[in-house]
View 1 (cartoon, one colour):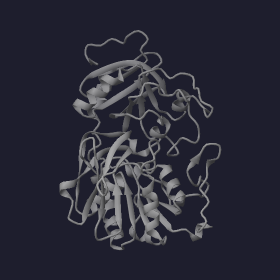
View 2: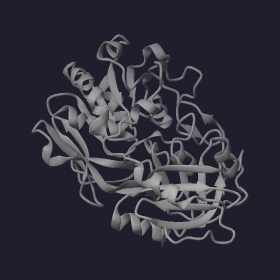
View 3: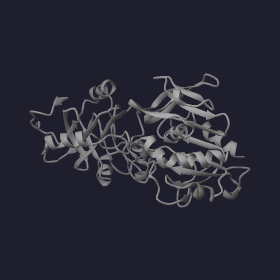
Length: 396
């Protein structure tokens, strides 16, 4: 990567990455024209780019894909985790080629244009990933101009002016606006080849009314979380991140689920934590993942910290302390719970084998537990799907 000054647009360049440090990398733009500013991170998954782009936890971020061939299977209406993309844009090594997959409906370039997302190809993503690993996740801008016209000083100013994710509450920007029941005009259980989304047949629970009722607080949830709760035998109602204790309890929950989401958990916790503390006092079973895990940690007296580069990928090994088993997990987070800040009633259950950071807790005086990773596997391995069965089993 070169310094921002002096600069000249290389021949054929239609896209550019400008970091707040002044570093510049030229490439070829695709998707929507324009520019976006956010935190530049990297993701190591080899598949599931459409699920990643639509994960609300990526709000405010530009994703560098370490796998070079992104876009070669196209896009479809099934492989999405929200109603629209939330990642600001993507940086990839190879140009997006014509899709080659029987499930393709729309080429990635057209999908990105339709959703006003900027793409940048032709970047040395290995060098950029090393830059993030050694220097931390930087603020930056990616821009796409078919005419090859860029105002680099202005883009650099944008990158330097962006405040960063620390202290930023993004849950309110991505949460549902109203309460709804999952299954109302939405798919039920998990996806199966040849069948699409359909829940398994439950011999005991023959109707929604017979199933235990989970109220899920949506801080930026992924659809496959709700699908797996249904698959495990629950009826699911979804409420906004700002839902009050009274609004949640009025739905008559058998258990509470706290979803994943973007931004700084301490900022979201200003309004979420008081509600979570009240819900914990009911001693209803509670399950949190990712941001939900961090919020439970704060609610019991712990603290969270901004990570240097974050964990984003589908191959993260996590040790389960109860039996020493290792789960290969999907992760997407830039903040972590500080284990040293946790009280005695919050027992650590999982740790990352990459860096030793906290990846799970359970409370000893309440039926509540949480994990830092994404057990719903979209994309990723299915080692941790048992957690949904564990939670729904607690409700019965």
